[in-house]
Length: 510
Ligand code: ATP
Image (cartoon, rainbow, N blue to C red; front, side, top):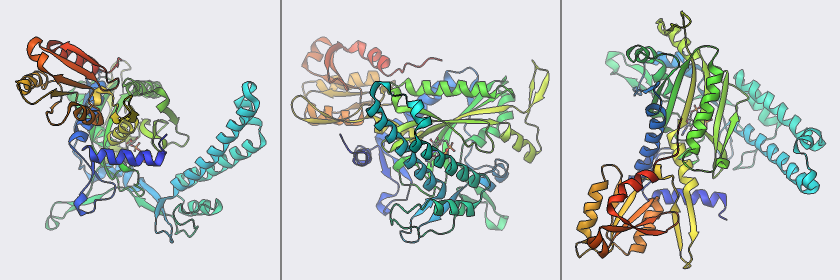
């Protein structure tokens, strides 16, 4: 078993060594929480985006896509609430000089109590064996009850402080819980302060009277302000959705988990416009549908779980996360939010333009309600990378590192390998590659022994290696090696296209 921390280090160094992810501006010591995608990373990222797009836009008659600009009129962010409320409570430890999110410090404290409860449950399960009733234990054991009361009390104070934006109450909570800095171990804290997460810049030259604009912190607002344009020009009937992928920027306070939390990242969002009153049914629908998408790639269901929000954002009347088991535990991968008519209502108010829908069945106009699905592309990348990294001991005593990526996401679908670089084998291999490369990203390799070439392809997650040998010239067959089983079969070259296409098609139906 590899320790969790070591495992995370292995993934980051593998990502660099094989051209998936580089630190931004590395030659200048890098830029914190900003990353570049390398030659294999860009392919994996494109494939995640493209599979999401297919499942959302291509599979649904009533969902269309757009690509809005990153810069938007500054009033957009006033209306959306980001100018006034998109901030985190920030606190510094004076000894370690480390900066933290005050809410995260409290949440980590809560997680420790939860761990204690889980430990009590496990102990009791061992003690009582078959007859153990977990529910009864949780509601009657005095020690557990004390932990639960403690948790409830802390949550009440935490959510209260967040809701009323009460920084003094935050500080008091951290002091009362005697939370220490994980680095210095001291309680020498500064006051808690607001910190707006939006990056701003100037548009136009100063002489023209430059105005302050923001780098968008989410893609959703580009969809809301285009709601009417798309609805009218696409003659869309409710319920319908608008999907978009693109960059978002947040000046995150704590950004120490590789590509999990970045300052520049990419989102894949879909806003689904529905009749008021029907939003909670659609919310349940999209929760199921999105989980189906994740599971369609063959990753075990135990790696995913839902987390229903207890504390709702000011714009939501229901919210849930799809959490994934990252190397550092279960964390948010995707959010599904029932955003009511908050956003369209606010844009209507600030712009003075009607953003309504005339419903011919009801014969009335209304501001539609919105259910959104929002997933971080880079977070999905990390989920896939960490889940697929395996170190295997082989029968002959050697080891291999293999990325067991879902085939639909693999950067290279097939490697074409002439056994030797002579006797017409390279030419034949090139011919095979030419017949496949429009539909599949293929790689041609003739350097090194075939074994070494297999290892290199395993390390980037290539589902198939096709070896071209002397028999290929005679009977037009190649050996096809499966990445996961390492089994080899001889097959006719004419079947390759069909075999690869079948392998990379996920099992996703609406
Ligand atoms: P978190 O609680 O982790 O900060 P959030 O609830 O603020 O996330 P949303 O605003 O709901 O996130 O954004 C939707 C999705 O965008 C998230 O589920 C996540 O996958 C992704 N995301 C958000 N912030 C970042 C970031 N800084 N870096 C990478 N991905 C991010």
